[in-house]
Length: 306
Image 1 (cartoon, one colour):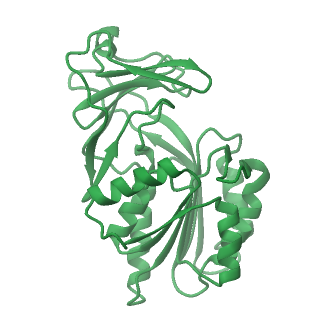
Image 2 (cartoon, helix red, strand yellow):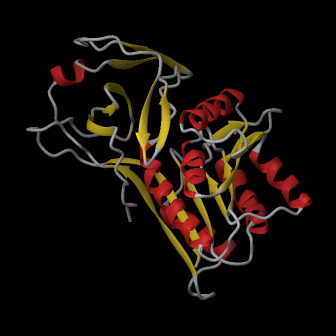
């Protein structure tokens, strides 16, 4: 299945093809590589050349942004876009990313639904654990939906960016618990502390390093991490887990199987559900242009208990 995209008013995938994508973030159009776009683009070269910023890869480790060949203005170093009451900072980086992953909007909407289900059964704010939380769009939106979020990421610059998003969205200074740590190590320590969560989000990279050079390889470590998450999950009332990853050598079936194995499903336990599929960005070409194909944007699995 392809998870339904939740539209972001300030974002559009204008076109994709020939290993690139053309996107609008707020008032600015960005052109950057995407290896999933293996087909021919729908717009002509002139439309692509009018991008405000174009990413130029310089090595396997990154590159730089420069004005498009026919850009009519200079884009700022950063700007903001809005989504469901949140204000999120867009900042083009030397690593091609801009700090916002629009394909995750479907998971932000799912998380808000699960938080609402939990709040309907309890007067307490649901505790949500966001692992590999990066720049924190999911944290901000979950907090606005009524959760108390523990935001965990190994990158100090990413944490600063996430706090920028929290301030831009007018969250209180103590609305989020900010943690700079390796995800697996943090989960082990939370288990010793006896903490429990109503929901857990995981969006790990295929490979990574923790703040103390802890090694992360998705295929080698995800099962142990999910085991820890299973023990952290509150066993009372509605609860949920979302696992997503981009550019990993797996499949939706594998995601469904591991979530079913670790957390249970309808076939064994009433009220437990598993979904798995792809995240994708639908094309939103300019008026008068032909239809644009959806762009694959990673794998996702969801488990929830109603």
